[in-house]
Each structure stands twice: as structure tokens, then as C-alpha cells.
Image (cartoon, rainbow, N blue to C red):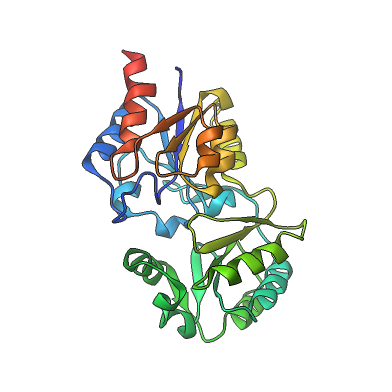
Length: 277
């Protein structure tokens, strides 16, 4: 199997339940890099949200962030490709979701934007302690999100929504999915993520592989969540974690162990490293 690029989701995939990179997974990534294989974090997070223990591995250069909205060269600090929500569309969406009981944060220039009413009540929106720590490290607090976006006049990478009430989540998702100018996905049970229609992980893998002169058939995507579906189906080889959804497992070429059982390392050893022996 001639794999030249492996795109890997972070939460629920490369990182364990404690949001940490295991030694086994780290060693597997390093083994691939030594063989000239590109290891690409492919995440709903911004680049600032990629943990240093992943980002600082020598040889990890490219990243696909905010569900494919941004493809970037982290070494050169250059953005290769973007698929963003316009400022006006983002404002329309933020005003639409505001009446709901939902924590919302737009991502602008690699940072999430939030308000004290959200940051000071994270548990109200069903965020785990690990997720609360991530939010605190990757969000900038402002008095009013909508006013911030109005004044910034910049495009938005993604709008993230967290819910404490699943009925509220279902109701809002049904309304948002009536639109044809956005893409609505989810990465965990209590969130929704709003992107531009062509901001998907799968499309971003195709764009990055083209930039690097790699055939799509030489790519592998590893993930676990709904927002990983295009990555699993559009990469040359799609791998899903056992903790992933049934829909993803049915679409995948291979199902590996869970994220707490070093599933990424297991898949890489079986499908890439052992195949080259």
C-alpha cells in the first residue's frame, strides 16, 4: 500500500479520552515521518488548538483545521487554501442562533471568540473537564460576540455550538439544515459545527494532496466522528475507530481499535508499516 499522506483527526482518534497523545501513537507517527509519509492533523480545532505534543513532532508540517476550512503550512506559517463563511453570512447565523439556549463561538484568525456569559458557565453546556480546559486555552473573551464580528469585518472559519439540552440541539439543527448555503456537522454528541458548504475534511485532503503532488489514492484518513465522514470516504483508505459511529464504520475500509487502545498506531502498523516490510 503506497501511502504518502495520512490525515488524522484529533479528538476521539489520535488523542485519548484525556486529550493526550499516547507513546504508542507518537512512535507510529514518527515511524511514518521517517519513511517520508506526511502526517497531517485533520481537525475541527483551529491550528492554535493542535496540542504541542502533536504539533512539535519534527516533520509534522501541514494541518487541516476547522473541518477543512483552512489548509496550512505550519512550518512556513502560510495558508494554502481556505473555504470560509463570509462575515455577513456569519452575522446572520449568529443572530439566528442567539435566541436559543446555546453556547456559540465563531472562529476568526485561528481563535474562537466567546463571551463571559459562556466562558463562566461552561458546565451548563455539558462540556467535560477536558473540553473546558481546551476551550479556555483556545478562546478569546470579548463583551459581545456579534459586535466583535461586526467590527472585525473578517470571514469566519467555523461557528461552533455547544448544547446542554439535546432537544434544543435537535430543534436548531433541523432549522439550520433547511439552508443550502452552509454545512452542518457534529464532532461530539452535544455540539454542532457550521461551515461553508465546501469546507470538509475530505475535500481538504484532496486539495492538500494536489498541492503536494500526491494522488488521492495515496492518502489515508483516520477518524471517528460525523465531521470525519468525507475524510473516510474521499481518502484513498478510510480508517474508523471502534469508538466511531456505525455510519462511519459502514463506510470505512478498515476499523481499528479505540482511541484509548492506541487505535491509530494499530492501523498504521497493519496498513502502512507492516505492508512495507
